[in-house]
Image 1: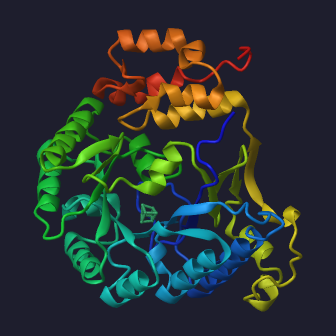
Image 2 (image 1 turned 180 degrees about the vertical axis):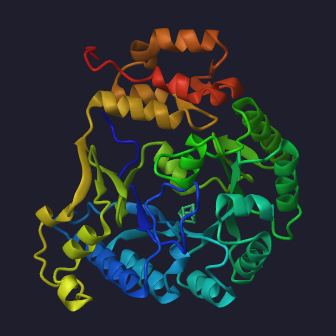
Length: 416
Ligand code: SF4
């Protein structure tokens, strides 16, 4: 199988801290005091150093890094100096491209103009702000820490700090939300002085272990029904498209030229290396993820942290490939079937779908050789479209994406 990209790799940094937990959130994030955050930063730096040694990347084999993404959690809960230090270290140890896209996620109420200006000066050139809704009642129902006026402050501060490449996260399907409420949110965003270049439009999911799941099980969550939610979703997409945005993925729209490079790489099979608890990586056909335990992570990457409270970078480590992985929560060598499935699952998330020629190039066979009957079935149902050597989901197919994707799971007993 051929690689998707010649010697390119993305970097993801997970910052697992939040002011408090939103009621719907099952991300790996929690409140933490300053000393835990300080230790985490030290551990992260150690992990970055240990995974960048020349034993791992022989001379001339260090990939180019086209994008770095600081996600969470709430990365802007860290001090600007810490964020700058981590980014500096990544640039020092990895081959970050001159024009790399460097994104930081930010929540309203966690950064002012000075902090955002320092972050921008440090080299971050894209900011993604978790707004979710412009309606204060909806924000309250979600358990967000901010109201709309907090967002306006951080939005203006990010523009003043020089962030031109911007994303806003929005959620549809909020309890009690009607189509008109969401349209109001969209219109308010379109009337902002600095329009966002990119919009991520997520559907609320009820996840295990969240307060919303408990309320849902107790019958106390007034969710829009599925048809209503899909109607809201498409109304909003149409509204943004009329204003010049283009939907390019199931949940993402952008103005021309502002598609998220980092996520697009992920959907098209670029390799990535994650740092921080729970961070996933995909490298040399191996998919792995760091431990999800903060204690285990800190104790491993800062030997003696428990005793000293904070360790020195690299202290106690010998540079070796064994040390590359550290404590993991998952590690799997992908088979060809896994890679084909992933190519389909991720590729079909994009509105342009998969390139059937690229499938052949990578896997040495036609997509029809693997999925002929399934493609026929879903094209017949109007869920998949086959055109100009591409295969993509129709709007009806996007609404039923899980159903279509589940058919792409390969029976491992099949002889490919
Ligand atoms: S701010 Fe984001 S990561 Fe933090 S609790 Fe809320 S939804 Fe989860």
